[in-house]
Length: 48
View 1: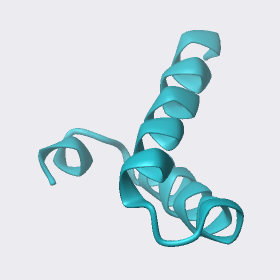
View 2: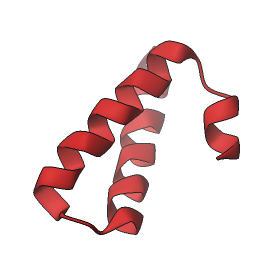
View 3: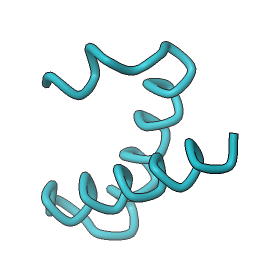
């Protein structure tokens, strides 16, 4: 995952938590979960 190598530890942790949460909502549909998490991550970055 190239994406992770460019992220800080804190953001990686946030994304991992997000992916785990999304798993409960979406089940085993990785594309939907990852896309949503990356979108959330971009939103978070734009605020900080």
